[in-house]
Image 1 (spheres, rainbow, N blue to C red):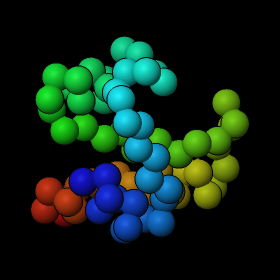
Image 2 (tube, rainbow, N blue to C red):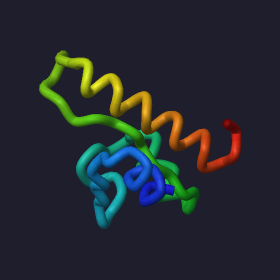
Image 3 (cartoon, rainbow, N blue to C red):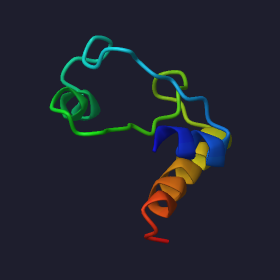
Image 4 (cartoon, rainbow, N blue to C red):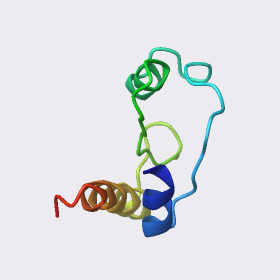
Length: 72
């Protein structure tokens, strides 16, 4: 799923080898630790700042996620 979203959007795929280390308690990490395949679609940017590119990339990630499951 993450590879598909990355390929469809051009967004960088960041894979943490062990869930829950970088962001303990995050929903995606908790799912991964429970054996539930999980991704988090976030666009890295300075805290509290989002420009048009950030917003468009995030939107494209959500569309790719929905396309992955043939919802759109």
